[in-house]
Image (cartoon, rainbow over all chains, first blue to last red; front, side, top):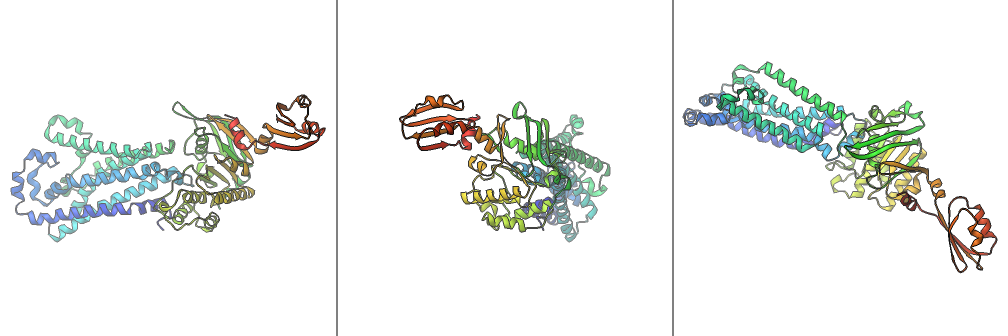
Length: 266
Length: 301
């Protein structure tokens, strides 16, 4: 059954990496959430001892918020670790979709069959999106379930909104990687460019927290629009989400058009 | 089967007109013109880098022509590529397969993409080529991987087969069986275009050959016509010495060499006059060396 079409075959190929990534991120997220119960009483002292500027380097605007459940999850998970994991996962998943088929020359098998390039592109992208959504769901659940066990007073909508925010950024960057691999046929390039963009974006956001002069440049930073920990309180930021999804769609469209027009690299 | 009625009525399988492909400043193929009829087996020959693979990749729509057009069954190889590929079996040079699958899984996957769930034909081909389909592909030898790639290209009984050096790595028994399969398919109406460096194989199974060099088509001829136009060497041993001048007057004869009662000469064209000239003398032996395809092929470069 898993060899019925490209979509299912790609899912079949990615079950193993997805399993390990899911296991790793769920262990991390649930551990961090459980740790809150153990640390709850001493978190205030910890926050006072932590230099505010260093905290900003790690994307934490207000270290004193760490005593709250949302602040704790922001500091320990959403400010750095979850974005790093999800972005890296997205970039690798995106780059290996079409890029791997082309570098391995197995794309020759697929495109000598009655399969259009658009269909191949969309089936591969559907698997990429599915993987991203599975990862996001696992993050949500592995924070929500422990938070219920330790009575953390966090609603599912807050956790969903924070996870949604990080997932949108990861999907956008992963789609960039996916489209670069479709446009160029070069897997390495589709890994390197999105990772550099992510790093610069993150650094710009950090610099903006420390230096006022970075405000203009930082408007281009993806992390400027990353609204954790506010998302725990305010929910999904719909205007930003629509912009992110629109940009993602445009990048995807460019990738698809270019993939249809260019020569394969065989 | 996916047979499209519009495809079946067209008698020209491949029509290439003014086809050129450039990779930046470097040349792929230049102003190529070629027609292949339905049911024909065309051997596409040329040294490495001549442009054979480029031509095949344009036909498969993997790459796009810089100039000119390529039509398959009357349809544009780019615009109607999807429809065309339903009726094509393709084998690339050094094919890469999905190594983590067994041969059976791989072939099932390819048949599924084609929208066919019938496995009888590939099992039948696997038996003919003595191919074990239940081993993981990454454990197979190069020759056995090649067999699976051949089965993939032929299992759906395509109307056009395009193969780039299909017998690389096959043992002589399997090569023979492959030739038999190809001849059978052509007899059933399939058109075969294949490149090969094994010229004896081309000579055995092809109706015509096209020779390409430096991206340009040098010759397209029937194998038999091509051979008849080539220089043959006659070595005639007479019972007694003969005067070579008797033969010098015959226009088709060149480079006469005399050794005692043995006369050697090259001829091109009709041999009727020569046989008559020889028949005037008592002959003890006669040998005619026909050039093989390799000699003909090399003579073009």
